[in-house]
Length: 185
Image 1: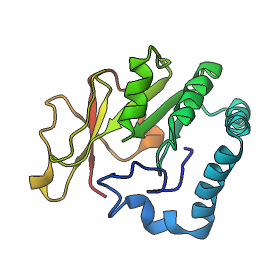
Image 2 (image 1 turned 90 degrees about the horizontal axis):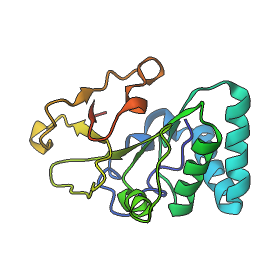
Image 3 (image 1 turned 90 degrees about the vertical axis):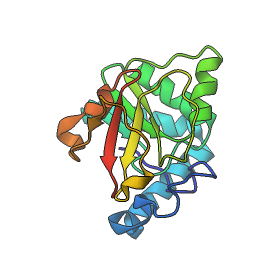
């Protein structure tokens, strides 16, 4: 996957910032944080070069699946447009992104933009007090909290994460209106 620095690229009111899984464990190693910061620096300095580098890497790596944002989120709306263009340039790669930057995605679609079929956008939910707008019925990822009193009502047909992305790929293939639930880290 391609990650960005946790919290700093996330929405300012992200309810998951406190206790973020990407702010502990191996993701806090200097080499890992350095990579996240390098990704953001390259994007900020020259978005065209950033997406060219990602495209070239994917073209020659043989990877057929890519996850955006194991850490962090899209920095801005232009980044989302770059994700769209990259998916169009690489139709044999299946892309997937979890996001809490719902407004960027909703505005793109509201203004006539379409999401390529090889890019799955999954809106990240949070606890039952966190509300978000999903007028285009994007797939939703829920958290099954250790304290179940925090849980929203999960859809009856929610798919359960088994924690093995490299063999499962179900999130890459979520369709409109479908959802997945993750157990709290």
